[in-house]
Image (cartoon, rainbow, N blue to C red; front, side, top):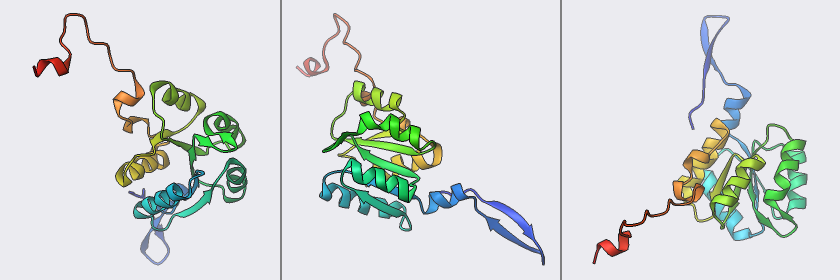
Amino acid sequence: PAVPRVFAWVPHGYWCVVCSRDAMSRMSPRLLLVDDHALYLTGLRLMLAEGWPQADVALAHDWREATSAVETGRPDLVLLDVHLPDADGLGVLPSLLERHPGLKVLLMSADVGPALIRQAREAGACGYLHKSAGPQEVIQAVSACLDHGAAWALLPYAWAEPAPAVPQGVAEPSSLAE
């Protein structure tokens, strides 16, 4: 990820690069991954290591562990599963964001649909990541949340909005091949 730089003149005639805390967190972000499936957490951690080898990545397997990790670790971004054994990720999101203003949360699920994505957006999530996403999609979504505060533009249009109905009298695409 690109790092914004500010050049400052220091005594003895040298220029130095000064990076803000925000810039440093983009280079080595503090990430919290919350999912009840150990295999998925391990794979996600490996994917994120490609984009941020210096990242501080914490893991939580349920909501209880996640709340403790947010309090102690102060992550820059939480990747939160929608379906946890002890909580509904979408349901607990508003209270989490209220207790930790400025925290960014990227929801994850194997479920997808316009209603779920709309609810995630309204609840304050910075994005929605389908669990079938590949390494490049994961890195793009995390980068978008860290750098811009949102990853909604990365969603395939078909996930975010219902497909428009085919007008009467227009042939369905499958019938055109016949």
